[in-house]
Length: 171
Image (cartoon, rainbow, N blue to C red; front, side, top):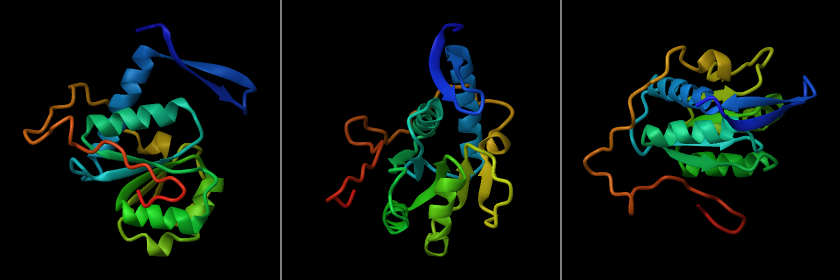
């Protein structure tokens, strides 16, 4: 548990930061608890709009443990494409990096009826949208410790885990 699981480069500190397996497990539990506060149900969609980082992996694991479906988004995509994907997949929660990505979502926020929460990894000085929360503020202080309990209708061969949109496809 004390071995390094992930390393992230922190540009503000100009250094790599290690995350142990124990820390990663606790963070997944806190993310699961936060997702549980959003009144989501198994099969609901959550989107991840991050560059490669441990937060991407941990959020994905938390969502899957809650029976949710993850929808990865391209960080450099156009706002209209983001709106299409968020609407088509009926995404309820979006995890994005910060101001740069939030501006893209804000450009189409009026056309996102299903989106109930936008979580930013980097804190935002002032967000005009009440759905926006910083990740550290949104995460629950206490993790969900119990393993995911598989619903009776779960079939690992047929239960949706991820929806991937690529150029030329509709998801």
